[in-house]
Image 1 (cartoon, rainbow, N blue to C red):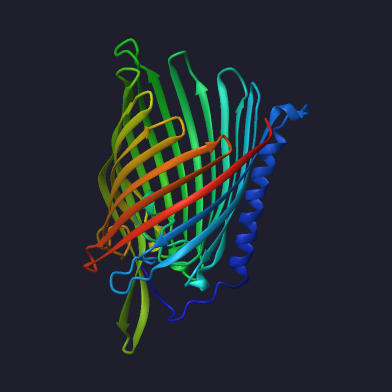
Image 2 (image 1 turned 180 degrees about the vertical axis):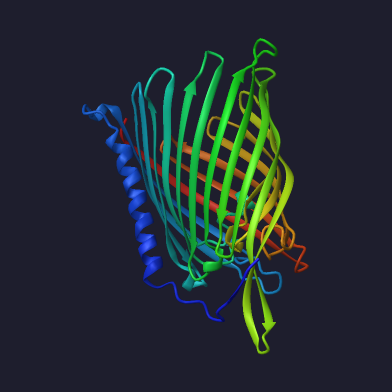
Length: 422
C-alpha cells in the first residue's frame, strides 16, 4: 500500500475531457461508417427498407426525482421523430436507427431537454461457417428514471452520454457445435458528476452444442467471461464461468438456465486524514477480492394470442452513477394478451436488489430494493397509426439511508409510421 497527498480540490475537467468526448464521438461515427462501407457495390433501392416514425407522449409523474420527503409532480410532453434504415441480403444485414426526443416539462422548465439515440448494426456471413456481427450506439439522456427498468436504480445526476460498441464472431465447428468470441465496450459520462463516470470492457468466449442425441429440442453451453469496470476511484476485474442449456418442452413451453460463479478483484482509493503533525488529506489504495454465485433463468409460455415469462438473474454490474459495482439480483414476470385483432394488453412486475458492502468493490455501501408493477394497453387504428396507454407503480427502498420513495406514472402515447422504401 502507498500513500500520496490528496488535493482538497480536484482540478477542473478542462480541455482534456472535451478532447476525450470528441475522440469518442469520432470513434462512434467511424464505427457506423465502417458498417456501411461493408455494402457491396450494387445497391438497388428495392434492397433497402426505410421507415419514418413520429410519436407524441404525455406523462404524469407524482414524484419526478423519487424524493421520499418532498415529492415533485409534473406533466411531461415528449415528441419523438425517428428514422430506421434496414438492408438484408443473403450474406449481409445492415441497420441504422436514429431517434430524437424533445422533453418538455409543464412546471420544471429547467429540465427541458433533447435526448438522442443512434445505433448502427451489421451481420456479415464471411463463409458458410464464419460470421461476424457488430453494433455501435450513442445515447444522450436526462431522465432520472432512464435506467430504472434495467438496473432498479435511479440516476441522481441530470444528463449523461453513453457510447457502446459490440463485436462478435461465430464459427460453426461442426453441425452440432458453435464457438463464439465477443467483445463489448461501454463508456458513460455524467454531466457535473465526474465521480460516476464509468468505462467497461467485456470479453466472452462460449461453446454451444446441440444435445438432441441426449434430450430432444435442447442445447447446452459453457462460457468464460472477463469484465473490467473502471471508475474514478476504483477498478474491478471480474472473471466468470457459466454452464447452461436451453430446452423446448413443446411448441409453447421453453426454459433457459445458466449457473456459475464469479471472482472479482477490486482496487479502490480510500481517503483519510493524517496528522503529520498538521492534518492533511491522503489517498490510500486498497485491494480486495470476492467470490460469488451468478446465473440467470427464464421460463416462457407462448400461446396463439398470449404469453407469459418468468425470469431470475444475479450478476456483478456497474451501479449507475454511483462510481462502483454492485451485486444485482433481479426477479420479474410479464404477461401479454391479444384481446382482438386491434387491441392488446400487458401486465408485468419486477424486483431488483442492489448490494455492495463497504470496501467490497469500493468505499461505497449500497443496499437498495426496487419494486415495480406496470399495466398497459395498445389499440392499433391502422397499420401505421396507433395509441397506447399505461400505468406503473414503483417503490425504491434505500436500506442504508432508511428511506423509501414511491412513484405513480400515467402515460398515453400516439404514434404514426410510414414506410418510404420496402
